[in-house]
Length: 200
Image 1: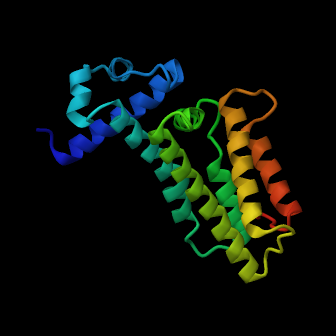
Image 2: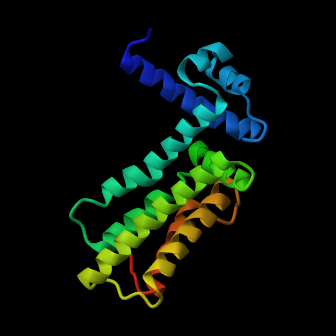
């Protein structure tokens, strides 16, 4: 049996292979064979680490939650102003660019929502976390006196999540009219116009 740290490395490599395979094949068409081919392994080798394809996809989705929720929330714990926190929340919620395989996979999950209990659960879990991140920043800004939302804070948080998801989708889809810098600027402008200026 592989040592624990080696197992984690191999599982991470398989998660990354799944992300790449989804970009090439799409989530609907994805099979363990596709992931095995991308990883240079056999299907049996994958089944040593994961029970089945759904188990691998759950872990892959968890990587998305870690990056876009856990890691982002940790960045917001440092002693910075609410305006700086909002800027960080916006910046780290967007894709790195059109080739952001992990975010593209997360959007593939969104497409399957409504057709699978698993995908419904994963998509809703992610949404609730995104919403909580923005609402937390907004509430801290209101208490601090830095923000004066012109709409209900819950509606504002929901709007920022919707913008994050919409711009992110356009970016990973390769829309030539929207890049990361454009999306960042537009989200910050929208937040400022609604009473929550992002700084930094």
